[in-house]
Image (tube, rainbow, N blue to C red; front, side):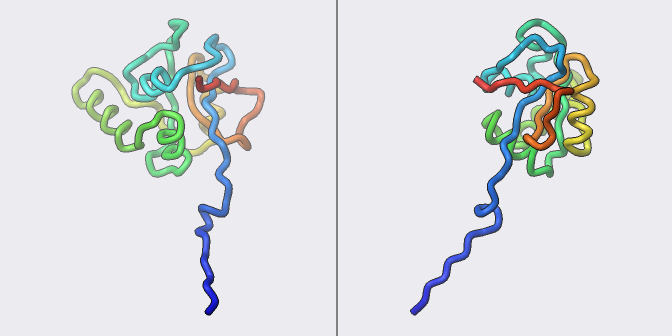
Length: 134
């Protein structure tokens, strides 16, 4: 008897790490999970230095967005969406800026003062700075 097991392509493929990125003028070099979660949930509207934070995200259905939310913020994408919807519908806040792909994410973060977003390694370049997660 021969037993054959198959691994899913997801399990076989090593997923690229996702990095928190910011506009080059952001003075903050590291964020803890709670602060990053508060910024991406749009509850905290400034960087720890006091500079206004401009949040950029990919669509909820994007696998990079889902991985970032789960791995770096310890929340599910639908939880972020619920928080954004609650603020928008109650008039107490706004949703983050939505971008179509990682190339647009890099471009918008690089050109928007105070911007924060996330990118896989292959999309990183000198136009954005990586923010460490503490």
